[in-house]
Length: 235
Image (cartoon, rainbow, N blue to C red; front, side, top):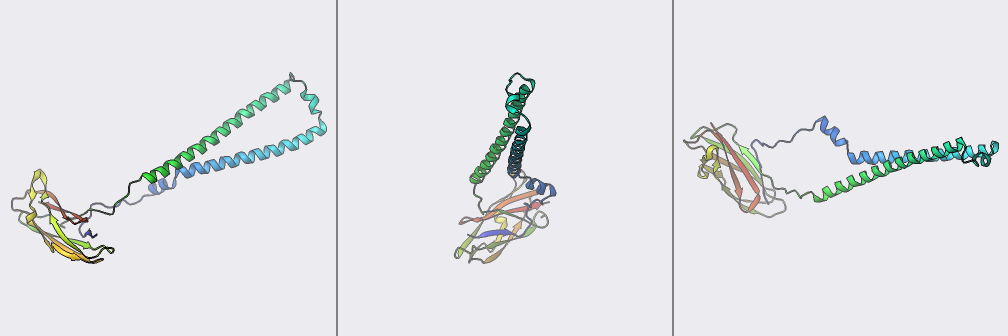
């Protein structure tokens, strides 16, 4: 298929990236949650290992200097009650820490699945685009303007025949510049793969043309890639 490229002003300009955009793009929620999960899990593992090592060392020393069984044999002793309460408080703290770790993991997995779903559901983009061309200066009634358009042949397809079709240019209040007031040179031609043809489009504003912007379409019925909007301003 052939494609058309406008040599005139293009109204769709890409917005320049700002430092704010770069900062927003760098803050990936999925990566942040994954990092937080890894850090939290590592911290819990280190804490558990250090506590276990400390308890083991303390028990060895305790058995050498204290009769542990005799001290803990009385369940009503104040220190034994404090020991039980301390264990319960520690269990509550560890349960809460475990719950937070699991929630971070679930949230991270949910965001990952959601992102994968969005990628799968994203519609396929077509390569067809509509260019817009316009005269460099506004036209006055009875004045003729010239616009230029380049048409390039597809490298993967053999020679094609192009027949350009014009439509009326519609302006304010339904006013029109008839298609017969436009002339394409050339209007029909053959296009080889990779070949580029330049088309000159002559547009004459009628003597009774009212001020405003007039727009119409220049296309090829056999080639959907050739679609160009003609925009004329009359003063």
